[in-house]
Amino acid sequence: ERSLHAVIASERVAGVAPAEVVDILRDVAGALAELHAKNTVHGDVKPRNVLRLSGDQFALCDLDASARAGEPCGGKSSTAYAAPELARLRFGAQALGTWPQGRAGPMAARGALDVWSFGVVAFELGTGRSLFAQDLSNDELVGSAYGLCGWGGCSDALLAEVFSSPDAARVGSAGGPEAFGRLRRCVRHLVRWCLSADPVKRPTAQQLLDHPLFDEAKPEPAPLPEAFFGF
Image (cartoon, rainbow, N blue to C red; front, side, top):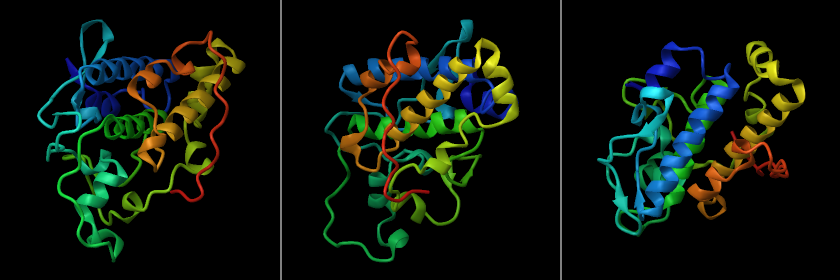
């Protein structure tokens, strides 16, 4: 067994091996869909909590931060993979300078929090870099949390980094340039959808699993509009 964190750090996968990345994302999406079907939110989806098992299958692990949907979130979620609405609750005025007073208590656990984290992992696998600067030893944000707390969505420039390297093009085009082009567009669509600033607009875990990225027989999804502002 090996964590996805270790795979990203030491193997040529993230940003350069499109087919392997798709397989990993399919496994994680399937694990999330299964967990959410049981009315459970993982609460800390990140590469360190994804294990490669025998047969090169990947599975979620470490449910210490999990909670039943609707119950208060666990307090263990890593800030580098936390959704903006959760980060705002945690950092509040410290990050934004001013923030309305009288906020409610702990946020209720919901699937959209896991889906955001999945999107951050997908971005990392597609580009080979973190979405936000983070301490790789503990998966916490480094520096200001303003970018996360004030997140508006993925810009086209940010998504253009997905499988943009010559190595990714060389490896990905082995099955033909048209197939590689479709794969890139599908990954970008998936990342943008998961990283929607509004949690209501994010897909469910089952919608992740049903995404055309994981089924070449399905028509390619229509592009999502660029966010009004993003990072």
